[in-house]
Length: 167
Picture 1 (cartoon, one colour):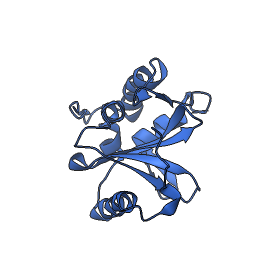
Picture 2: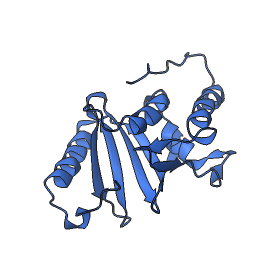
Picture 3: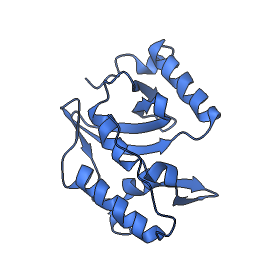
Picture 4: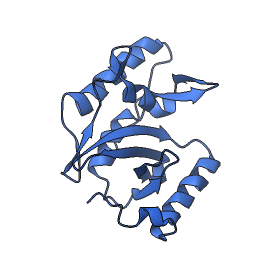
């Protein structure tokens, strides 16, 4: 299901990597529509841009470090996985669950747990959603937090998640 991880040449400049990655993102989410469960459009929110690229693109390829976003090769090299996970969210290798965020919004997590990668979506009305972020899980603490959220949803611990499913 997952494509190979993109391997960047050590000599590649960051802006070359970013332009290469943006072509993939643009093809996957801007030039072509992506649907979760064949019914919920994944909106790339193209009206929200930073440096002429969708803001969400930057969340997919960067990580917050000391208050600013920095290029994160672990996220960036898996950019092709984002669409694949959304399209194959029912695959047994993906744990899907809802979580009530501090923002008071319910988000859908698509966790490729064997590969330490997660995609997070948020609903926009009845048939649209947007990509909040995706990231490579690089430490045990994050795995434990995701496992706790996953179990919390499946064990119906948070009553705010009752009947929250999108489909």
